[in-house]
Length: 305
Length: 320
Image 1 (cartoon, rainbow over the protein chains, first blue to last red):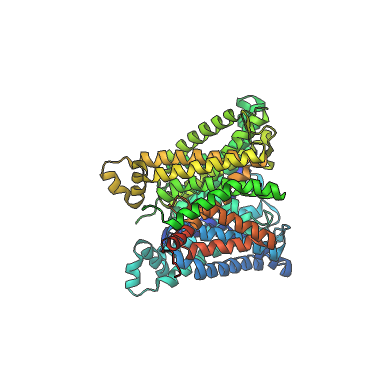
Image 2: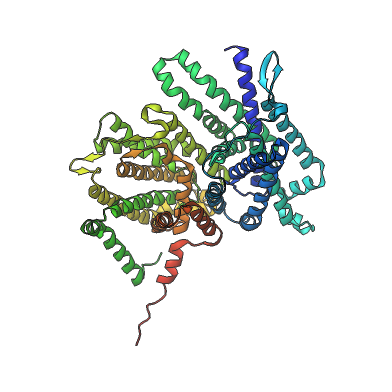
């Protein structure tokens, strides 16, 4: 295994991790602060991707497509929050699971009705269509841009939460929502804004993922489960945790899938390795999560309070 | 629980008669389709009852019970792949595998609680889902047909009538078992721990151990349902382990009535019945089911059993 094969896979893992981070950041805030389990977060990602595909089809502008993805998912998120989620914050987690599961079914069917069952495709924008040179290795400029964007969102959300008044209110609301309410802050508006922000991030992830994956029904479900793994590994409610969790999950998943079958083939009999390799590779992330939780039940970076 | 009212007893008896008479009526009218549909509903009734043991009595929301349905199904499919049709072998593999996987996953899952428990059980189920997706020799994501269905001596689960009565037997055993377990000291500790785990511990009960044992029991019961399901379809596929199935089981339990004995069965009947109805009426059935699930989540607090209990507790009015 040489650097030539390793570095692109490392970068792929990093890029995948950044995509997961965009999803996990929004979800972990909603989970940590409103303690609302939103299984429909992946559907918001799907809505974002579809919006991007449609806007790109009409305008041909990639920037507008991403803006459309963010706006579409944010609107869907705000609507869901107002109509359903906000009624359930004080209730049991089971009701969250149920309501958002119903939402997944509903959104999938709506997407099928509106956009049809065939997958849609987007092209990578021209400016980022080429490759760039990293340590002498050619790597897709677009995927590299995703890594940069992920870092920018990390820095931006860190500033937003630790450097602004809105972020301070969110942190206060997380540790004692009643007290924040008693001090005259409209906690409902705050929750709504936070939910919408999370949805917008999911839409952003969907929009930028659209050119590298096919935009199709159910695309949100697999990534949703991985996002949940990220959050559990990182610690519920912690942005920092979700960042490291996303990197760990993204890297392990990508590297595991590309190298584990090869390693097994060298160490054990070929037939067995061919059978077990892909199975083990796809389970690897979950095994790592189980191990982490067995020793650190609250995740690697539990949120304070 | 007080003794059942006259109306409730009559309803139970009527239900039992309908259950036993269904294949006869279906065969007489030639509508054998209803036997397999009823079989499917009752199998999910068993699985939902199994989930109810941990979720309803124990308050542990497992979003991964589809895993055990899948393991049960593959404990028929994999021996059958090698030509083994002995039902006792299938059952043995199913019980051992489900108990082992249940014991291991529960030991780790029970270290967390609340949201963490939901997520980790979900993740374990996904682990099984992806493992079987990539096991290409057993069909991978396409699933695998079952040529040798479970045969227990004269009882052949490949025959739809045999299978139906086997399902009814297992279901009745599950219901009686749950009724008894709910009131046993084991069930009392489990239910007490749901309300206040710390107090139950302080009273000297080993709460974690009780929950662990309940999870294993629930897992094996769910596995048996999976085994029956594999025989019904003569097919096993990883999609049985998908988190959609786990969510549907939760819907059934909540719809029927969390923590009640008959609730999960009624929930399974109502949910799958509604699904079949919606499928017959519209292509966009999933949207309506989705809406219905949301409505149940937001507004239905006591489930069907709750509404029926309030009906049954009203005295019968005798017209003069």
